[in-house]
Amino acid sequence: MTTTAHAPVDYLLHLADNALVLGQRNAEWCGHGPILEEDLALANNSLDLLGQARLLYQHAAALINDDADQARRFAHLKGARQDGRITEDTLAYFRDVAEFRNHTLLELPHSGPLAGTASGDRDYATTITRNFLYSTLMVLVWDRLQSSADAQLAAIAAKSIKETRYHLRHASDWLVRFGDGTTESHARAQAALDHLLPYAQEFWIGSEAEAQAAKGGTGIDAASLQADWSALLDDTLNEATLQRPAGQGYVPQGKLGVHSEHMGFLLAEMQSLARAHPAAVW
Image (cartoon, rainbow, N blue to C red; front, side, top):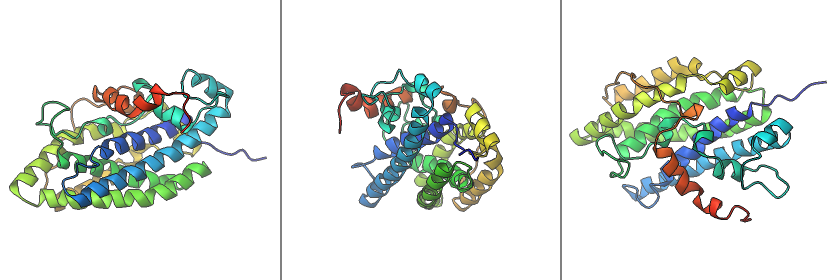
C-alpha cells in the first residue's frame, strides 16, 4: 500500500505567502504605472502571483481540514466556513502578522532607500529590482519543485514556472535598461540594489518546514540554490553595468514570522474588507 506524499503545511504557506504579499505590493502600481504598458504588466504580474497563492492555499487548506491536529492549530481563525473548515480565504485574510511566513523583502514598500519613510514616492527601480531578485530565486525553486513527491505541488510548480520566467524576463530587461541607461536611471537602480540585496540573505536561512519538506522529498533546501541564483544574478548585473554590493548586516527572518514594521500596514489594507464581514459569502 502506497502513501501519498504531501508537503508540510508550513512549507506550502511559506510559498503561498510569498506570492500573495508580493502580488499585493505590485498591485499597488495599478493606475499609477510610469507608462500604460507597465501599469498593465504589473497588474498581470500580480494576477499571476495571486493565482499561485490561491493554488497553494487551497492545497494547504485541504491538508489542514484532513488532519485533526492541524485543524485544531488553525481553529482560532475567523472566516472559516460554518462547518469549521478552513478555506484559502481563511488563510489569506484571517492570519495575523506573526503567522505569515513570507520573505521580508517582499513586504517592503516601493519607496526607495532615500525616501525616508514608507509614505515616500514610489520608485520603479525599487519595484523592478525586488521583482528581479525574487523571480531569479523562484525560477530555480519552481523548476526543482516540478519533481516534488507531492504531486499537487509538482503540478503547481509546472504551471508557476512558466509565469515566473516571464516575470524574470520583464524585471531583467528593465533592470538592464535602468542600469545601462541614463546617469539618473543608473543611480536609481544601483541605490535600489544596494538597499534590497541584503534582504535576499533571508533566502538562504533554513526553517523547520523547509527541512521537513526536503527530507520528505516534497520540497527543497533553498540554500542549495544559492550558487545558481548568484550566477544568474551576476549575469544580469554585468549586462546592466551595476555593482553587486556586499550582502552583509542583519539577516531578516520573515519566513520565521519576524516581520518589518511594514507588514502590519500591508495586511490591514489587504484584509480589512474580509475582517469587517467575516461571515460574508462573495
